[in-house]
Image 1 (tube, rainbow, N blue to C red):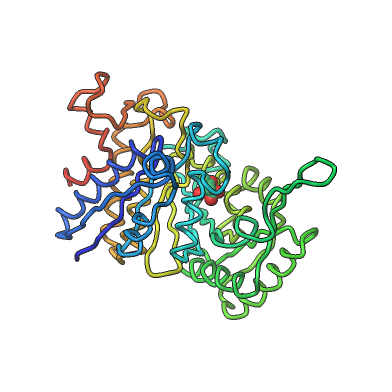
Image 2: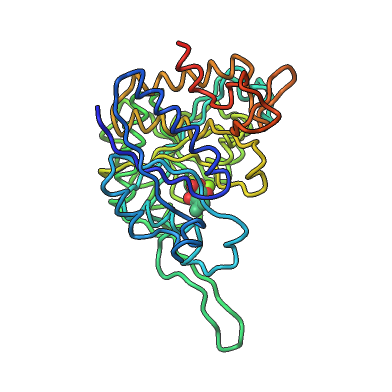
Length: 369
Ligand code: IPM
Ligand code: MG
């Protein structure tokens, strides 16, 4: 097949991990006879520096004309002082909204040989396989009124609004139930229905959606309890469906179960052009040190193959390549353990020589097979 892929590396570690994912896709293209065209564009702080806005028109136009978008990460201390509407993070919200990507899938699985990289005990995390389904274009991230206003007494007042309509809840609910059907048939809906009206509606609609999925179990959990249960007994979860902000928070927590936030990919879907990105950010504290973990981005490329192009076999090949690379003992610093070989993404690094092919992580394994 032929596909045009918009490549938006962004800031910080985004620039280190993206080339690895592209190499993996090129290797897939060669091996399975697909022709992927990669077109890069600026986003986030990079774009602010060049043209003054985090999501330039041309970038959005490119995304809309592409078959899928692969995104690295945005943001960094350099741009933190800017007003909210001009910050790098706006680009993420803007592109998700403009492409209509209301459903964000964040799978958290623990690779068997990384069990010891987690800060949690082996017996707690062994075998976890959770899919966080996060609503992505609604809730408090987008709700109005919003803003910071001056009060007559000189104080300021900051406002955001958590708001969901029946239809917004229904469509994300359906995504969760459909996903659960292909998994262990259990949906846990996360809310704060004991306090928030928007959550009360969320719960009611989820109960209604479940009526069309009698084969799938529906459970409800308050978000505070969900945060606790994720570290207490994460194996109880199959699909967790969350509003935008709860999904943001719980997916970071779920990521740490797997050993490192550098491992978790995501797929944002719901419209014509899907967007695929690691769940981690630009990590300015480690950027440029050749220690970033490219696996989340490589796995996001895998999700792109499966969700955007229905190339399941190819997606599985990426998954296997990641497993094999880990089996061979290659690790980035965040997941290193005694007896493993630490590699980075920078080929020119003096610490590495050309035999350390783990730098290009999965590519190596793909070629060898
Ligand atoms: C994520 C990120 C973003 C979000 C930020 C960077 C805007 O944390 O994708 O989880 O909150 O959605
Ligand atoms: Mg987040």
